[in-house]
Image (cartoon, rainbow, N blue to C red; front, side, top):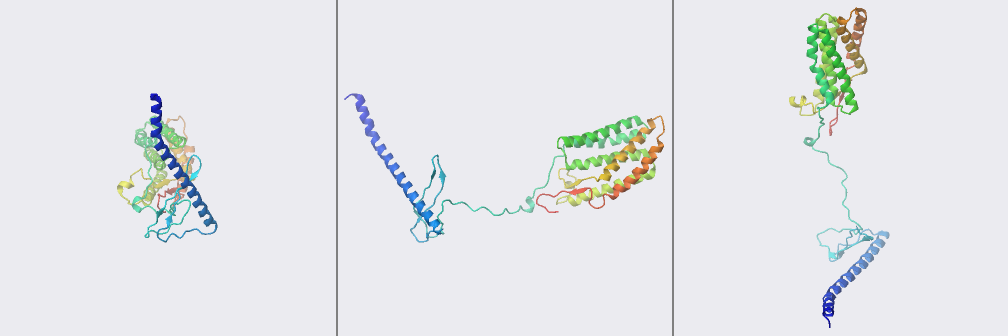
Length: 317
């Protein structure tokens, strides 16, 4: 014999045991498949006959569990022939065993409730804050008699007021702090103009007192609503924490009209010394109109009108 024939005979002699083992395993797998399909048919017959449980309480009986598993061809089912211990309860035979889903989720403890938070660092809020900081310079120019500079600062304040509102709507950067800062900036500007123009003799004193009284009442009510809407614990640090919104200011329609008329009156009064002719008649008519809208808008805030209490997660109002 040639060496190649010897090598071939040797390889066949070594492969025979492995081939025999593989054939045995394949035969066992086929037997397991046949028995599993046979048991599955028996169980389906029992189910159709109305028998949903098998008497597995007797010792030594076989517990059959099926775990469905999808392969590339179809569904295979396996079972185990392991006796059930006596101390374990009976388990009904079924095609799949699934855990029972929870019916409800328990609520969070009071200490784990989530509070509302938002970022106050937005461009509209920065413009509103700049408008508030410009009020002392505006007041100084009016008292000093420099109405040209006062008109310029007033025009820039009005432009920033329009710009911050447009940016908040255009880029969806509204915030609860902005809803508080914007009317606060308008009140700061109005207070500065009313006080300095009345000091300069350009605005009647009774009208100035009426405007001051309304704004003072609204400011006190704003502090009150902030206190009652703040989630507990109510501390001084949390009270002035602008990242914890609790109440949102919603101006009434008459209040918006009143603010526009007041700004128109203060703007015309500031510009009047720069004009070469007198506008005393139109100014007096506008002053009476502003007095009426100021009283009307003040009464429109009685109760909770114009204030929206924000509901915190997990809390009831």
